[in-house]
Image 1: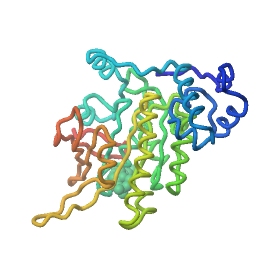
Image 2: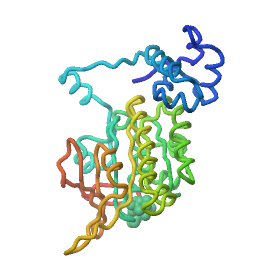
Image 3: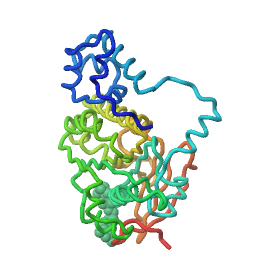
Image 4: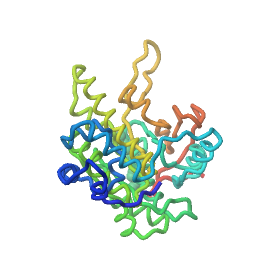
Length: 321
Ligand code: GTP
Ligand code: MG
């Protein structure tokens, strides 16, 4: 859904909202009414130091102004809405087939795997394919690339854009790269910074990787509950964006060795239940000699265990044949 960019000054036209309240909201960096819809009243209360009744009133008003109403759809209407969501190609036919067409807005996709399994390469490719014109399977949109591991490579983007015959400079400008150094920066970026830029034709948020900063910062069992709480908070914001701005979210995850009493330990995505439940579709990537395999491990529409193969070349991810 695209929202009209109504400035928050509009709120002054309603009883009970004055300049002081408006000032507190703009100090949070909120410029437009549609941004308010993202918040819970409790967050507005805490962040802007506004009492809870007024915070509830502000959120209600904002929802009314942007025309967002809690309304049930019958299942047929719901099916139509879900089936007509925009999606974009991964640039690899076998992966598009696996994910039933492409990467779809509102969905959250997790790509987990060991080092060298192709996670970062896939993220680079998606940052380019989302920009393709619609007739070539793209959304003609920009991407946000949150690089927590320092592996984003503009030269790799250039390689991939030349394969898709896009202008490299234009394509690079359409990727907004952030490199947070700790969890506080990552949260600030997601909660405060992204809010204002997503409305301007961003259709993909990439986080490579979702877990690295949390694992580095919250070490040891005594911090586990806190770590999970923080990850949950971040993911909750990503979900709000996905729904409100029609954005696809893609994140990578590390894997852990799951020891078994017999046989060889197998790999499971890190981050426990919080991350497991957050993603709409979960995939495990692995290298298998000279090719790579992507396998679905959880999804409401893709059979568990179904997989696709691809190769990684100078031009990015490609079909094996
Ligand atoms: P970690 O971030 O270490 O966990 O790994 P990852 O899963 O992100 O791996 P990544 O996507 O960075 O790399 C996967 C593989 O892609 C590498 O092992 C290389 O074999 C291959 N690769 C990366 N860059 C290039 C390139 O420029 N050309 C070619 N031919 N292959 C590349
Ligand atoms: Mg990587």
